[in-house]
Image 1: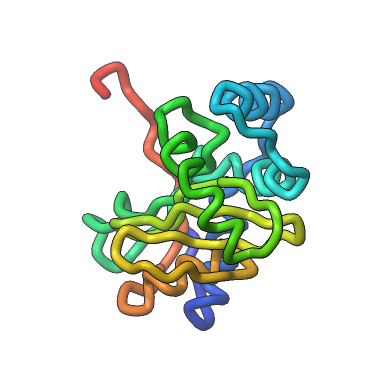
Image 2 (image 1 turned 90 degrees about the horizontal axis):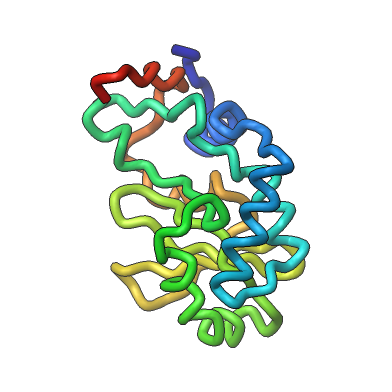
Length: 168
């Protein structure tokens, strides 16, 4: 385990940098295909977000004081999986666009236990819609989003994901 130090936001910034690995060209092509299938043209900001964060949780994960809660942290870019999450978020495009006063694009689910649907505007600002409140919050970074959720459960480290076995 790599221990995290500093304030909550500093720990989250360190952790996110450590859990995000580089995406491949094949993953970028897959990203475009998923968005195309959903009828969404990804913005340049959305593509750049995916390139930076699309490899989240591939090899490493954020550790909380209670290990049972580690799996409750969500950092999932929509362009990785064809599971309906992108289509679900897309139904709120007009609502978020009205708040942002510019075009937005859904990019991820980020949070803890009940994650936010995250949209990005043309300038890289992140707009979050939640199941548990009606307001849309605006953040500059994914770390700021997680900070909202983890004020009482400060991450202690980052560790490698266990190797999958034939029994998994």
